[in-house]
Length: 217
Image 1 (cartoon, helix red, strand yellow):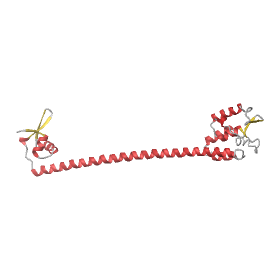
Image 2 (cartoon, helix red, strand yellow):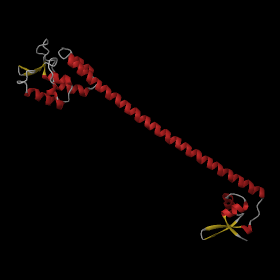
Image 3 (cartoon, rainbow, N blue to C red):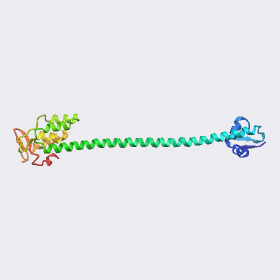
Image 4 (tube, helix red, strand yellow):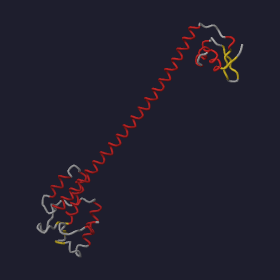
């Protein structure tokens, strides 16, 4: 009687290590464990039909091969799923950025158009209607415009192109904070600047004739 490791027994019997373990579990091979190592007792191999053992060995070998193939397939599918998920998330991010950019450009274009229209037709009595129609989709912006001056365009002399300071600031669509600063600045220089006219206690400008960029900064 001799002892050998599972690997040595596999080589001795010309079968896989799994087949050796299976024989030990079935009891057709005896084994002992010494110092944590399993040894096969070769001298006391129990009789087992050769055809049955060969069939079992082939079966277990086939199962092992199939398991290996399945594991590889699972790993491949997991990788493809992960890749598709990352691509979908990237597409969603790109679409979100595109949509935000579209709305941003639309808002910028709208403000630009309104400023151009306001500067070219500032003295026309229907300017309020143009502004109200253009910004009707944005109630908050419309409220900010209306709260500053609810009167129609206040023109001193339509032929000369004078408009009130309030209407001028309103049509420029500045923020409330900036409107207050600009208003204070114009009122400060109203009696010293030849570009500014004061009549009946109100300040009037002539935007089609004078440049007020130094006071609007």
